[in-house]
Each structure stands twice: as structure tokens, then as C-alpha cells.
Amino acid sequence: MSCQNMCTVSHLVYICHRCRNKSLKRFLSRSFHVLPSLRNENFNPTIAPKALIDIKHIRDNPALHERNCLDRNYKFQATYPIKINNLTEKWQSCQKSSRSMREKSNWLTRQLASKIPTSDTENTKRKNYLSEARLLKDKLASINAEQSALNAEIAQLALAMPNLTSPETPRGSTPKELGLINEEIGLNSTYSNRCCRSHVDIGQELNIIDFAGATTTSGWGWYYLLNEAALLEQALVKFSISLVRKRGWSIVSPPSMVYSHISDSCGFQPRDQNGEQQIYQIQQNPADIGRKPQLSLAGTAEIPIASMKANQTLEASKLPMKYVGVSRCYRAEAGARGADTKGLYRVHEFTKVEMFVWALPDCATSTQIFDEMHSIQREILTKLKLYCRILEMPSTELGASATRKIDIEAFFPSRQARGGGWGELTSLSNCTDYQARRLATRLRLQPPGQTEQLLFPYTLNGTALAVPRVLAAILENGWDEERGVVVIPEVLWPFMEGVREIGPKESKL
Image 1 (cartoon, rainbow, N blue to C red):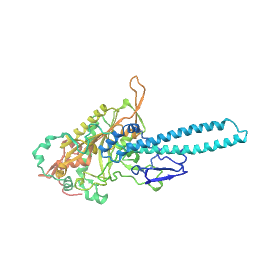
Image 2: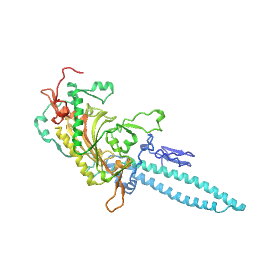
Image 3: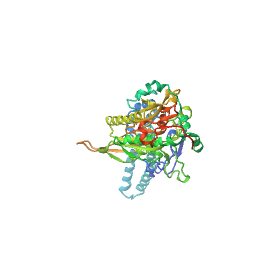
């Protein structure tokens, strides 16, 4: 063990910040370390769900989990399975030692309770027994503390590992194209030869987007939607929610602020180009640090919706539970700059309609629901008349929680010189039991003629509609250069207060 990051604790009360357990009395010169990647200064309160990770599967299949991490480009985590097994061996050694000491301690207790000494010899023997019992008690306390520390480190390593990857997912960094949406639009020669105006230029020319004022107010990555663009935002939300609701989904309006440990449990770890912080955390009052849990702004409605059933047991008869919710989403996008991120494509705050499902924990059921969610995404974009491609995302593009992910990208005329003009609009993920285990969401299942089982439901999440990018795609693809107007998709007309085209204004706000 390296001396780096080592510290020695002696004769201190040990308080577990996860369970607040104060029964671990003392360390006797116990040297231990915490991996830098696992350090978390956030207060983890007693209300946090107790994660129930299948550590045995990691111990029994270290090569599988190592390969899985490497396939996803989680190089640091690829070392964790071996570390978990090494720590487990140490824990087992401690367990063996403590068992032997407890047996000896029990024997001493029986000897001390057997009779009152009647001679100097017996009195001396009793004093020796008492001294040995006290020494064993201290040693047992030290070993128990060491076991707890080892357990905590094993748990933290396991929590940091990603979900196993689906066989459907291409290994490597190259996505697999599955098909096109509105292919006839893309094949139209008039469409391919049209003017390539950026939504930034269109929005400013028509006085429907104000980036300059937002930069003064809030900085880079913020924006004002004005006039018809603000109407268009509401129309897109109403249209997408209406479509999903017609499929029988329940609607939810989730909070935008969550505990940071909830975001962690959901596996929300967006990776930017240099590993910058992507989550907005709420600054705490100095008096609250270490006393109250850290709060964060939710990066997606997936997080608060998933947590809605944390620490609960669901009934199998109630599944699948399908929700659609609209929320404001917040992304720090710390490392994002450049032409690819200009305008509405990558922003700090935006409106998104999200689908979320709890399903029975079997591949057939979750695949059926995955396909249903994908069909909803395709229907929305088909009716919006956007030319899109469907991609099975590769292993290096998967988030920590997803076993499989499909993205749909729209064609942006202004982006033709960069990446062929494609830009992501929606994402769809099957997270199996990854989130449910970390949020302690259980499932009560009682097969006919069998005893009751407590399992973990599968969770799936997918974008129904992310407003800024879809709005940008509509502006660019609906732009009529000759007339200087944007033609609004017909499916949105009922939600646009009679507006069917966006044209120049006589005067600006």
C-alpha cells in the first residue's frame, strides 16, 4: 500500500457518514486510505437510499466487469474488480481473526463467571483473565472498525462501476445506423440544395431569439425566446405530451432540484471532453455543510422521476409504470465551446419532455417497452417533418446507467460542414436494474405456486422532445429563403394561436 493519501487514526470515535453508526468505538493505529477518485465531500444523509449492489457478481466475474469498463472507456474503473477481490480477501481474513477472538473472549467470560476466587492464586488468575479480556475487546473493536472500512471501500468501488453492456450495443466508438426518418425529405434534390441558414441568424433576423441580452444577463449558453419562438416552445411541449398521453402514459410534473446523492444514484455522470463538472450544485450556507445534504439542479427529469419510487417496494401487478413529464433541465456544459455548440444546440437551461418507465426485470418485457418508447420518438419526429437518422450508440457513448442506448439525430443544414449536418435530438436508454438497486426500489413478485420474491425493477428513460434543439431544427429546415419566413410544421398549428409562418417584424422589442 502506498504511503500517498494515507492517514493514521488512533483512539477516536468513528462515525460512518452513510449510516451514522457510532458503535465503532476506536481505531488502534489503523492505517487506511481512500482512493482519490472515490472521495466525496458531500454529506450523505440517513435519508439517502441504501444501495443494494450485486457485489457478488463482480467478485465472481472480475474479467467480465473489467472488459466491460474498458469497452466503455472507463479505464480507471477497469481496475476496480481486482481491487474489490483483494479487499474482500482482507475482509475475510479480518472475519476469521475476529471469529477466533470472539471464541476466546467467550471462553474468558465463562471462566470469569464460573466462581469467585478463594485464594491468591485464583485471584491472580482472575486478574490475568480480566487483562486478557480487555485486550481482546480492544483488538476486536479495531478489527470490527477495519472490517467496516473495508466494506465501505468495497461498496464505493462497486457503486462507481458502470452497468453491463447489452449484446445489441456495438463495441468501440462507431455507432451503427439503424434507419432514417422522413427519408423522402432527405432525398429531395430541392431540400439538399437549399440555403443553409443557421438558426442563430434566422432567430435574430426574425426577432424571435435574443442571445446578446441573455449573455449580458446570464453569460454564455443562455438565451431568450421571443414572440413566435416562445409560442413554439409551448406548442412543442403540448404536442409531445398530448401524443404520449394518447398512448396511455401518466403525466408527472417533477421538481427541478434534487439531492446530489440522488443524481449519483441515477448514474447521471455526463462526460465532457476534459471531464469537467457538468452538474450545477447549490451553494450551501457554511452552517449547513456537513449537516444538511447537498442539493443540485436536475440535468434531466429522469432523475427526480426515478427517485419518486426510491426506498419503495412496487407490486408486480402494477408494472409497467409509465410516466411522461416536462421540466426545466440544467447542464453546466463546462467544456463545451466552439462552432458546434453555437446557438441553441448546447445550452445551460432548457425545457425537455421525458419518458420514464419501471418494468418487470426481464429482457423480453424491457425490450418491448424500449421498442414502444422508440416508436413514440419516431412518431413525434415524423410528424414534425424532420429528416433524421437512427443510431445504435457504441459502448464508449453509453452513460454509466445504460446497458443500451439509441439516439436520433436530425439534419441541420447549417451543420453540413461539421459532421455531415447531423445533430442529436433524442436519446433512449435501458438501464436494467442499475438505478433501482442504487435507489433501493424493490419489486414484490410472487409467481404462481412459489414463495414471494423481492427483486429490482428495470428502468427505462427516453427523450420525448428536447425543445431547444428541435426548435433549432424547425427553424433551419422550415426556412424559406425567397420569402424570408419559417414554415411551421402543420402538426403544431393547433397549438400556435393561428400562427403558421414566422416572418419579419416591423419593429423589434
